[in-house]
Image (cartoon, rainbow, N blue to C red):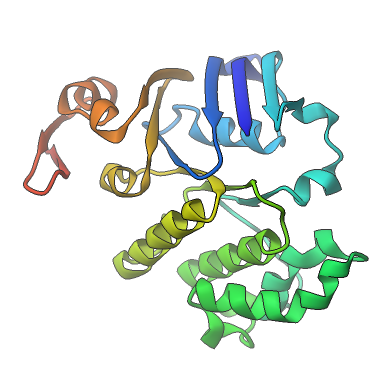
Length: 253
């Protein structure tokens, strides 16, 4: 569904991604991991079409991302960015409703209210619907942004894509677990999901495949057990890792 082929991204004379090839298919969760500055967010922006590669190709459904009309693309994939700044005085339900904008003027508009209500419920923020978005905590705002993406996804034909950049960063453990279970459920519905994560155990839990980045290069890609090994992670992060009971990983400080 999304395919990068030898994609190189440069900004201000600096190479952020160097000849990265990667694919995302419907019904799977791809976790993108790596140290700070590895290129994870840059890779996500290539996948969303926000950035275009200087070399190589980035395609969605077999068509170069540069050839997609923004509205057409918004009706095929939803994005949850790392940070979203809203300066307008909006309630949480109105922010979630922004996910319905791509469907304005289409028959899908008839389901706007129901789709937003369902998205708020699925993201666990129905109780926040009437509260001012600006007064919510960082974690609450993130969950409302997830509801916005779910409202957008509701009308999309399958296959569709959901791309998330560090969506668990502001969440407490309970809400992290809820989100990861939700992503697994969406993948079972045929949604292609790419997610940037810092927590390697979260990646082990949620992902069908893991892409490990370091210094703008794709070092390894494959099943979690094949990529998230103590030896490889120790080389990348510069600290020791050991496997613990239950299949998790523990950094040795």
